[in-house]
Image 1 (cartoon, rainbow, N blue to C red):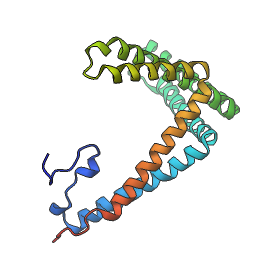
Image 2: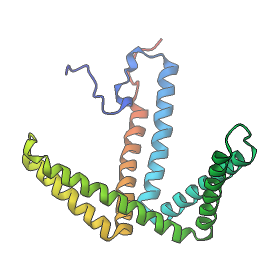
Image 3: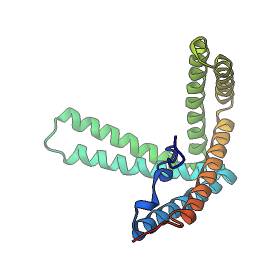
Image 4: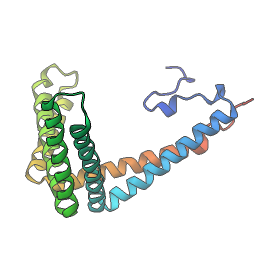
Amino acid sequence: MSSTEQPTVFAAFTLNSENMSKSAINTVRTTLGISGAIALIIGIFITFWPKTAADVLTVLLAIYFLIAGLAYVGLGIFSKGISGGARALDLILGVLFVIASIVAFANIQAAASLLAAVLGIVVGIVWIIEGVVSLVQSGDAASRGWAIFFGILSLLAGIVLLFSPIWGFVILMVITGISLIVLGIVQIVRAFTFGKGAKTS
């Protein structure tokens, strides 16, 4: 890679301000600044108040269930061009969505705990499978030691999540929050530095 090439990990870092107009540079800087600020705020919120963030996520999910449920019920009632069986399925699905929404709204904290447990269990199972696959394929890996280490780590993390899915979910939320904070800071710094010294028309 030559010294003039930029890494392609993030699309924002592959932009070359030398070929941009002043308005285009300002647009990129504004976009990076806004997205970075949003990521930073959400990251701080999730990191320091994971339980509240889980409650907010549950409320958003309940709102989605309500909107989707009403939409499906509307399709089932008013759609004349589809078969009776399809309309019945739309109605059933819509009613189930609405019921799920009502249950979630009735007890946000219980719904948030259930959501955390389900997500924790799902991620735990995925990590266990990933660990097993890594261990099985470690013999063919270029770096066998790292493959075994990753496999054991993934297995242990998955088992911990399965036995304590809610605590595991909180840890995942905190990790996500910290990642968003770092990403937000990087994007904000990039917004201030992007295009500095570029010759624009």
